Image (cartoon, rainbow, N blue to C red; front, side):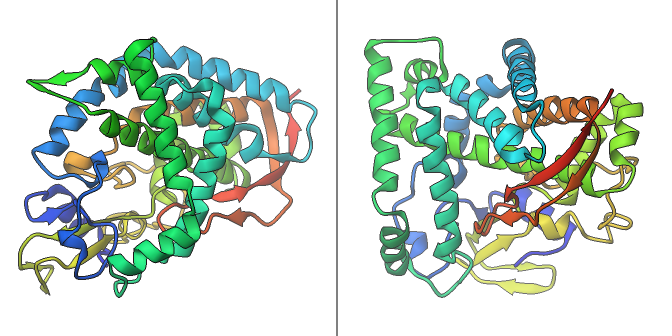
Length: 367
């Protein structure tokens, strides 16, 4: 387990020594198991080939031009719907539906948003039961546990996105699925299965993590003294609010790598094929990097956190997530004068994802 900031950053940036392929689970047989074709689990050169085919959709210019207005529109609609509610489950009312709506718009599966969200929540909760952090599990154990906890879920999600891809081959639309069916990198194009895997991964990552980010910002506005008033009086600090929320309690607590060779890391011997857990959350609370790391500080100058990772696997949707968080949190600040937590939060059991499933506040509207 890699805990300090400098070593976490070193591992994340060194993709030649530390592999993302088959890195999610411990056990001696995992390195030789067939790689699942997700961009998150691929090494070079295939990683860059696949990422290059999809990255244009998430460039800052694309987000600003094509999606910022839509994000604000959805936020305004959700805030209008929650007027008069008190208490308010902020996840159900705002931080949950906003990312789901936007990622469904981008992928092109708006009509199936409710079903996809149900699958996504079930997937995240099942991850909490798999105990993926246990290094003693091998692939046979994981297969058995996967069948027990996920049931037919992976097949249902896979078949859904496969049908969507096949539909776009004959009935193109102005959406990401259609763009991916036409995308090429040199002589290489994506297979239907690769597109389906990517879209399924993108939907899960694009709603679960952003929901957690927005909720963490709401937690800071609710539980940290003076933050709500400060951001209201200084709206330019919305960027600081989002960045500090990412550092303070990031939506992804950590991910995994596997050593490709014997290597000494911070004085410790790492053997080839050893699994490493890179704990972003610990790195972002490293007191050698951040003064008073448990304190939520809007004026913190150091914004070089690891919430989105580092290196070639830096989060593809970072710009989109930040824009959604800024839109939602700005609306909350402008709408409510005070917020008070009225129920103990119910937290997700997933080992890598940090966020409550329910967050209920009493809010006083501004007059």
